[in-house]
Image 1 (cartoon, rainbow, N blue to C red):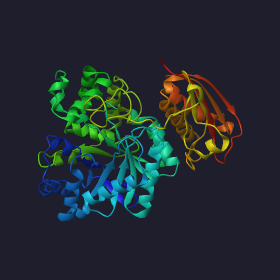
Image 2: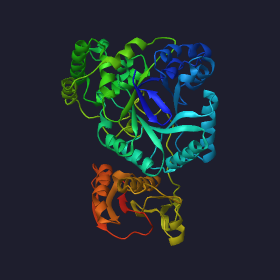
Image 3: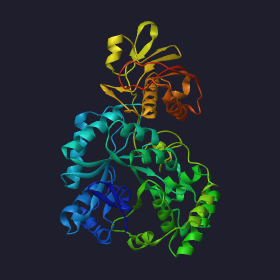
Image 4: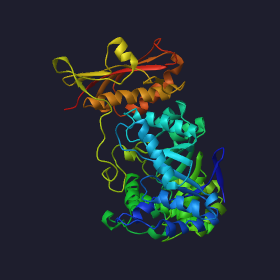
Length: 482
């Protein structure tokens, strides 16, 4: 058995047992008996798989886990990791407290071992409010450690550089989805964050069952996981390229006399910054305890790694950053859109009518009132966005990390544009002012990450900025697409 210390006092199994399939087992409206289902957790814990991952929307998973912890002799050995996934739109401090209180009650604990947070829309800065309030609850003792789920590298950077004590980020990371191997790994290395990787067996597609088999039609797939990861396979280049990868994995499985799923999980555990992999369990219906134990007996050589890397090189890159499948097309979810998660995403700011048919938005900084300006104004199809710094309320976001400040500034610009009926894709020009020219490259690269496919006209100059600690200020001009 292998363990990872995510933080002082929180040591987890490097193979976590994921309970998302509880929701799948309850999707017909039935609720599993918590006492009976909790008993199915005992063999996992007895074998050393002491860490269970769940969420507020995984059916009754929190209740089942809490029942086990408080009724089974082995309950004191477990680590219960959960998630809070609020609906898009304005979330208030009291709602954060109520969400944590609800999780505590469902899990029958006084402190949540790891609370992982998901944000739907980075252009709405309320996601940062939620994290600061969660941090307060951590300091009060309701939460042991804070984690994130489905965050991309830029916004993980914003969170940790702003003083949020994040110890982990749970993301899709597998042989077919390598998004976390780039910028995400760099941020994790810089700030000491561990990745909890899900999707490592691609909903069961990385297995002998699918080796050499014809491509299945979506309507023939029986579980949400299969529907989801079939979309990932399509995004990575399709079935033929996936079969080439399976051949490489199968070769190693035969060499090490283990399953293909074992090889896939071991390979991901070997990746830098990965603290653990999450393997799903259908409690009370099937278990893979003995098979999962074999993962820890495998030692992949450099040649083994190279074989897989060569097969991966034939795949297409899954588009976007980590978690983008929940925020923008292509929506690589079970349904292929966000209909099974949410109804709509409200505008970040309220647009107000102004003189001569103009519309304005305000981001709420004290400077807007003091100096008599708005964050952005729309006149006809033109939108002008004021010079924007990494300010949120009374806070400076991003600390001394110039890239983090830049990403948050662009988020604010995006929020203003979306609130006036536009998007970043409508931007024609940006002007960047850096307080110290030494930060130009970090700022320019962050701008490049966000505008790579848009490529507006741009100017970057050194200028002394108003306000202590601000490293970058950006203004923008956009024309609304017809």
